[in-house]
Image 1 (tube, rainbow, N blue to C red):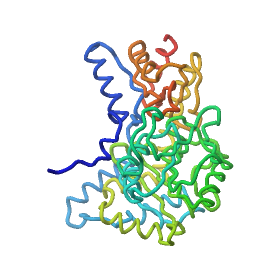
Image 2 (image 1 turned 180 degrees about the vertical axis):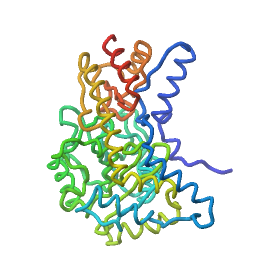
Image 3 (image 1 turned 180 degrees about the horizontal axis):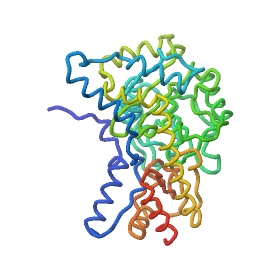
Image 4 (image 1 turned 45 degrees about the horizontal axis):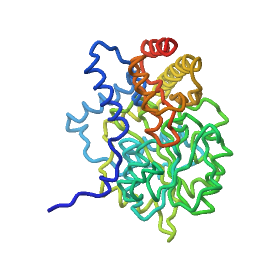
Length: 401
């Protein structure tokens, strides 16, 4: 008989966001008249700007003609798209040859976990985006779940709390191979300063670790003194992989498009090129992002596309300001200035209790902080992705709570 993958059975209950949906649906079954407002999953709600959708529409129509048909694209993605992203976001820091176009940041994080295999020691922020933890479990990079610690054995969790301004004490970190780091941080919305990232890069260089840097929300950073890329730090191209995304940048959550940067200087301990092995690995498990989506990405990089994207980013940031103003009257909040999330300390009870309270009393769907890790207990994450009408209604309900 065929045996199952034992790593799958290590996973705890269900994935966070399906559990949120399950509880929401159960509530609606009992309260069908309730008008719920979702402030939970970070799914964009504003339409993709027409210059971008027009580019994808035209690309799709070209496939219907003999002259315009395209099959498999280049392994690393369209050269013009890689060049445009490099020029727009990394003009002084990387070469377009080090960029790989993918079908979304989450997908490439999963492939990276498979790529590095099970014989690596992993560290990550706590709280953290659940995929970092669950993907590491599936890749065999952790031990079993320890109920007393509320964490997986052989997994190093770096506490990120208000007491340390959501930046971990790296001096307490024992040698690890991979360090997952997200800035702006999901879920807290904290953004690492240049000095903090210099400390992170310095640790990785001294200990020969590799940083997997998630910059999915970098475009929400409004403070020009805060770095938007790990490669703004000297020496980062020797120790870091950066993963970017069009999902929150241009509303491509359903279109699926992103990129990863694997610098040529990045090496394994035996001197082998990470980039060279990644190309070999990727050509085995991935056939490239959709050509249609990539032409949409190209439109995002043009002057008109950039202008429209900035309008959407400012729209969501204004949503966040509206929510924060309402929540601040009741609770202590963090984030939102340079990120689309408001990280809210509710009190000493369970985050799921607060989730239920907001669902039942205010008809708001949120995300319990404990779903991101033990250091999220007592917190709730509010998302600013939503229509202005719903955000204003949600703010009113919070004030009345």
